[in-house]
Image (cartoon, rainbow, N blue to C red):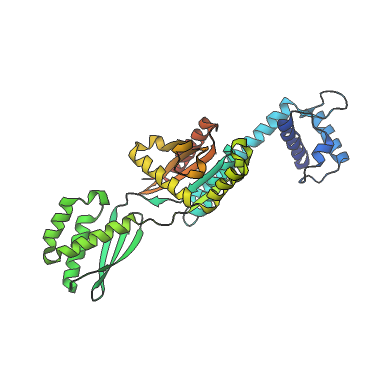
Length: 347
C-alpha cells in the first residue's frame, strides 16, 4: 500500500467502481470524467501504466481498457474495511461523549445504516417508557390551584397545574407531600394499583379527594406524548429499486420521510410490539400491509428497539423493497444494538 500515492489510489478506486458497475474494461477517457479527479486523459494514462506495472490492474488485450487484478481487488476491499472500521470507531467516540451530543450521534447512526444497507434509515430519540416516579412536590400557587412537580426516573420533570375545590394549609400540604413520596417513590403507573390508592386515601383523611386528583395528574403527566425527534437518511436510495421508483409511490415515500408524522406511528407500534411480544431480541419485521404507515405498504420495514436503561427506549428502522436483504439488515441492527448496550453501559 505504501507504493501508491493519493492520486493513484483515487484512479484505482475509480477503475474498480466503474468495472463493478459495467463489467467492461475501463479506459482513461472514462476515468477523466470523474469530477473529483480533474486530470487529463494523458496524465491518467501514465498513472494507469504505473498501476499496471505495480500489478493492481490488468489489460485483457491490446487497445483495451484496464480491469482490476486480484491485488487491486484486495487493496480495494481492505480500504473499504478500514473505512467501515473507522466509521464504527467514530460512532463509538460520539456515543461515549453522548451528553449534549445525542442529536449528532443519532444523525450519524442513520447515515451509517443507510450507507451500509443501501436502504432508507431512521432513528428516533429515546423516549421514557414505563418510567418510575422519583419525586413529587406539591406547591400552593393561589387559591384553588396547586402545582404538582413530578420528577421521573432519568430526571425527567413534568409540571401539572391541579385545580382543587378545597383549601390546604401548609402543614396539610407537607403531610400530602410526605404521603405521596413515601408510597409512590420507585413505582411505575402500572404498579400504582387500587390497593396503593385506597391505602393513600385512608391515610390522607379529609384530603382523600385531593390524593385522587394528584394521582390523575401524575398518570396524565407520565403518559403525555412528547414530540419525538426522528432522524432519517438515505431516502433517495428508494429510487434504486424499480418497484418503488414510479413517481407517485416515490413521492409518497419521500413525503413520509420529510414530514415524519407517520414515522411517529411506526415508532409507537414498534415500542408496543417490543413490549407485548417480548421484543424478539428487539427486532421487528413488517412486510407490506403489516406496516402501520400507508405509504410503506409496498415496502418491508425492519425495526429494532434500543434500550439505554432507566426507561429510555428508542426505535431504529430500515425501509426498503420487499426483496431486501433481510439477513444483512437484521444482522446490522443486532450489531448496532450490541454496540449501543456496551457503550452506554445500561444498568
